[in-house]
Length: 337
Image 1 (cartoon, rainbow, N blue to C red):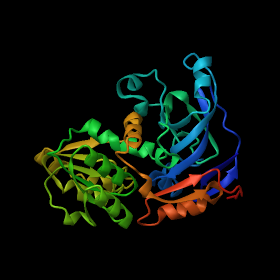
Image 2 (cartoon, rainbow, N blue to C red):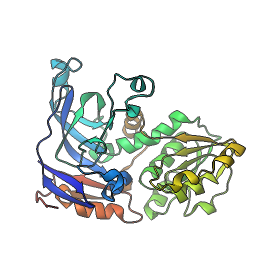
Image 3 (cartoon, one colour):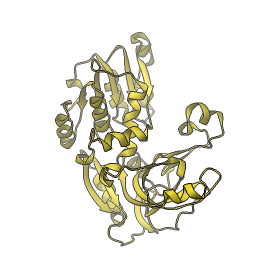
Image 4 (cartoon, rainbow, N blue to C red):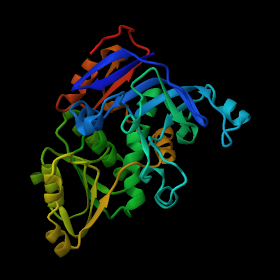
């Protein structure tokens, strides 16, 4: 099969062995995959990653290998279903899996990140337990956003939000725009800092107040979400939180200055609640897509054939670009690194 491979700061479409499903796993034929900020960081050398990236996808189940959990009838029921999938695979036996979920398993594997090939390929192997069926009313172009939308939906699980909440999202790009839309759907009064003209248009249409830089936002927000991916952005977000307010951090800053940006003494003095927020509920994300509460399709900048993976990554890296998608059903030329 064809798959994108990241190695030594380059990405190319290569011929790769077909994935082999273990008991309890499915083989999913990918119809669309999305490029996120983490994928761009992998290309830049984050964690020394070598392999096939991609954890935002929609596809069709082609094969399921039975086990004691997924019996024969259950396995056959998955064949042909259109699905999206959660990215964390835990052991389901340790204490961390029991109390915090597989996303915090000490031995966890992560699709396209840790110990697993990702979805920027024609097919991928993934546990059936991670799969969610896509409602018929949701198009592939919307369903491919299920993973980042679920991450945005994690915020209301962690923080109480109502119509009195003044919320600010700093870094309204690929993920931050979805965070702002979810908070707005929950009734919060939302402001966003967005550099992208496209993001500003999408957010304004949803009733979100938008500015181009954090200093233009009045400090004193009840809730501030940092989705900038930078230490400087995190520092700017911190300054907008009122005393006894909440700072939700969606960024993962590779820079050692990320911790310095929080200024622990000031957090103590102002009694700021700091919440780390990562993956979220797929069922809620699919509900928001199915009932039309959130339509992520305006975020799509372009769709590229898998063989044009390098071009797709270059497009995604351009400032102001929101979502770039990959389609394995595109042209079949295979490039080498």
